[in-house]
Image 1 (cartoon, rainbow, N blue to C red):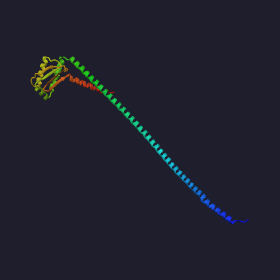
Image 2: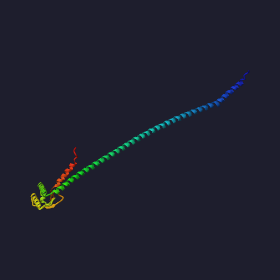
Image 3: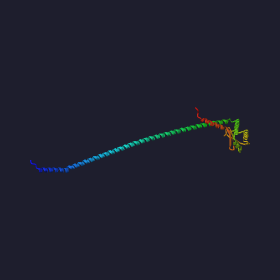
Image 4: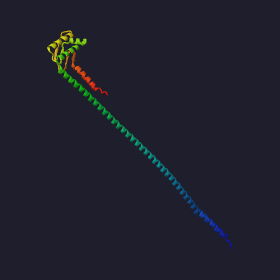
Length: 250
């Protein structure tokens, strides 16, 4: 069999041209397209990974913010609870203090009222005793008692200091008041005794006064000399009131 080299060469050339054409117009564009697709896919994957990483970071940031909000809320709730508890304790303490002050004030008021009542009872008792004593003495008054009263009054005159004696002596008017009406003899005796003690004749005015209990009073020149059972009854009332005020001994 004879080989047609021209045909062989022509076929080889045709094959090479076909390969060139395929390489240039088909295979290379396909490779380029595949390369671009792979690059696009890689870019998309990279972008997706970037976005996923960004989403993860955002999610982590959100979770961190949520944790921070939870912690802040917990702190605020705890602070509110502490403040409420502190306020409750303050209100309780204030209420206790107000109750204590009210109780103390009540005790003080009660003690004051009790003390005032005791003082009132003591004063009333002492005055009642003195009043009864005055009535008894007034009922028992007689000439002998009146003479004793005059003697006690004259003894009081004997004890006067020089300034009082001088003032009574220089007085332009002397007044003698007695709890009982004086008889002429009693009035004369008083004039004589006053003249002896004052060193001059005197002419006092005599008055009878119910305000004086079993006593005699001399006034003049701004001076006053008196003796009466009232003085002793006043002392008796004070002593009785002090005695009633003393606490009983066990």
